[in-house]
Image (cartoon, rainbow, N blue to C red; front, top):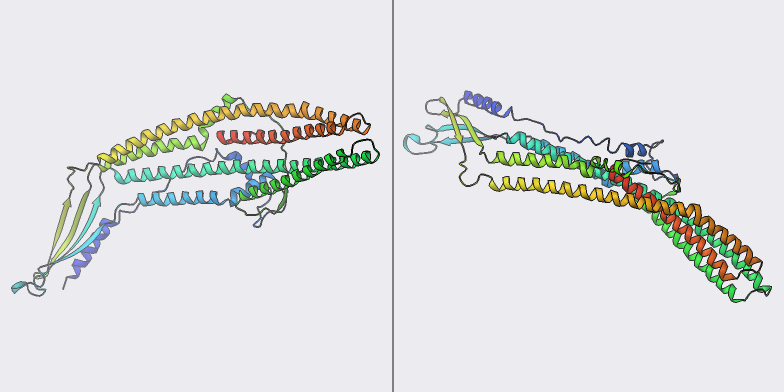
Length: 444
């Protein structure tokens, strides 16, 4: 029978070796709140976000608040941050000790028969990580958590842009419906006028057929605009994870033009974008990986200690052991070389992203100026002149000074200009949102 003191001494040895093995590592988070300060401010709804789908009129701040609180993709990105913290915690934990119990000289022959000569040994083995491996693992895991947080910041900016674009498209789709409805009413009026002139014998009956064709075409165009409106409503609702849109319409301004800061001043803001800012953490993480792989070239020790009980005499004895791998062939050459290659790869990726973002900003800024000039020309000159020409020709048609084709041509010119105006406004606002996404700041 093993002596009770053997048990107590063994238990104390286990507690002594395992009690210092607890460490909690948490993932660090980049200071990204400033990057999305404008988005968060815009998403602050003046009233609480309802649990059910919104009904009635919807404003942009309300749509942003819904998306930021309910978007499944954003929720998934935030959950990934928690998973990164769990991985960082796991990386900061040292290896568990191992306990082993050995029985020697058991059930032999002669004097060693039975349990009389049994020697019982309880051994606790602990791996000792050398070269600061545990600390370097914690650092690398925390920096990986930083990258996950940057990814979440990217998704938040993407969502901010998606809501803005979907909202603006819906505003323009609503205006397009109004214009198409107005055009259909004008064509109905023109058909009635033409019918009376045909009955009075003032124009050819063929003009009635032309007017009827025009009415049919405008009715089809109105129906297509309605389908486009419904698709835009569903696209906006999808930003907060809804499969249907119960709100009646959106309320906002889209016809306003505004000036942007100079391109050079906007370019200076590019490093604050999560797409670019994440590379500071990425490069640090790669350097931490190099330090860890270099440390892994140093073999770890395994220290064992225990107690041996000699059943025959009842004596106790300490047992110690130390094992060290011999780094003859494997000195982690491949892991160290890979870590350095990955650092170089990340540095090149950083440069590629910087060039791409600067190019994208220059392209977007140039397009902003082009579209703004087009919208201004349409608003100040083209549409007013087309409206004046249509009124003059329509009045002249009633007086017999112009024929039906002149009226159709004037009407077509006017509403093509109005359609182009809506299209240019959409391009203007989408370009501004694109620039806001690049600089991670709200401009307007």
